[in-house]
Image 1 (cartoon, rainbow, N blue to C red):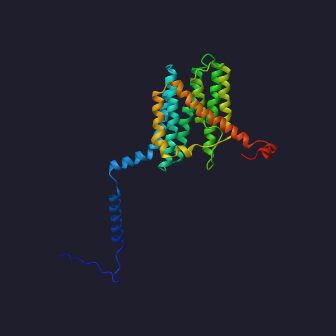
Image 2 (cartoon, rainbow, N blue to C red):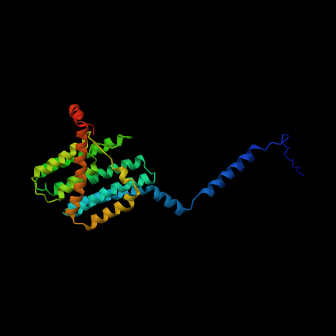
Image 3 (tube, rainbow, N blue to C red):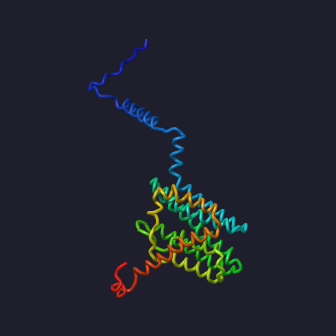
Length: 276
C-alpha cells in the first residue's frame, strides 16, 4: 500500500510563485484576446492608414499612363493625366495631414511619384510636341529639366522644419511645362527649350517660394476642390485646361520670383521705397 504524502503547508501563508505567474499569464492572454478586433474592422483600419499612400500610387499610375499615351501619340490624354497628377498630389498631402498620417515613407513615395509625373512626363510631352522635330534639343532640355526636378526633390526631403520652399516646386514647374507644350503658341523651338531650362534653373535655385499647403490642408480642398478639378480634367477641352493650369502655375512662378527679387533689392532702394 502506497502512502500519499500531503504537501507541506506554507508556514508563512505566502502564495507560491509558480501559480501566481500562471494566473498572470492567463489573465494577459484573456486580455489580449478580448482586445483583438474582428478581421473586417482591422482591415478597414489598415485601409484608412494606407489611404494617403494609395492616392500617391494612383498619381504614379496616372503618370505612367500619361507616358504610355505619348507612346501612342495621344498628347491630349497625356496632358489630362498630368493635370490629374497635379490634383492627386494635393489630395494625398491633404489626406495625410487631416488624418495625421504623415510619415517618412509617404514623403519618399510622394517624391518618387512626383519625379515621374512632373519631371519625366512633361519633358516627354515637350519632346513629342513642339520639339518633335528637334530631337537633340528635346533630349538635352528634357534631361536637364528632369535632372533638376530630381535634385529639387532630394533637397526638399533633406530640408525639414522650414516654411515655404527653397526653389520652384516640381509640381509647378511640370504644370507650366506641360501647359506650354500643349498650347498652340507657334513659338520657335529654341523658345520652348529655353523655357524648360529656365524652369530647371528655378527648381535648383535658392529662391524662396511660399507654400500652398495651408490652403490645400483644408478639408474643403479635399471634399470640393479636388473632385471639381478632376471633373474639369475629364470634360473641359485640352487647350482650356492648359491655359488654366499654365496661368495658375506660371503666375505662381513669376510672382514668387518677383517677390524674392524685391526682398533682396539693394539697400538704398529699400530705404527709399520701404520694406516689402
